[in-house]
Length: 165
Image (cartoon, rainbow, N blue to C red; front, side, top):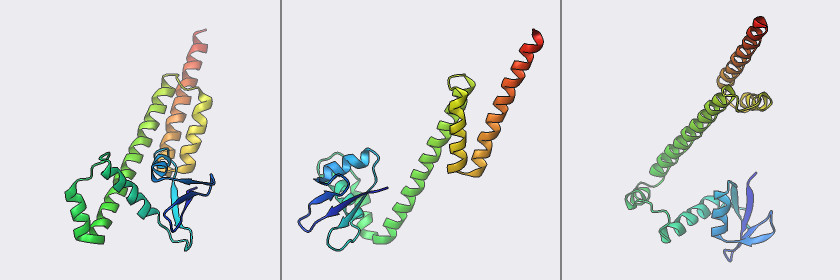
């Protein structure tokens, strides 16, 4: 759920969840902490989120904390919406790729950890269930097959130990 921030005509920003005024810097900190914000005009209800986020980026530019290439800024202005749509689409695809890669790395790490005995079986069950509920069905099936193979291997080892006794 997004934090609703109301922007008043005097440019003050009001955090409705915490009932207090906030600054652009505080909004930046909220976003960096993982909170999603939504900025609305207090009088009209108009969504001002993108304008406010752009303002945060520009403030960072002014403070030289995050330098955007001037050629990129020129192209954004020169080509208008077409270029902005292209950049937005490209960024969205890049972020989706990064998220997919992070999930895959996490899955592989969990698999290694469970094979190495670092993750108890009780912790593996919710992870497998969570993957099935929230994501791609094929991926969840792969995870389920891996878990089943692991259980089969563990059962085979137990059987071998019993046969040796």
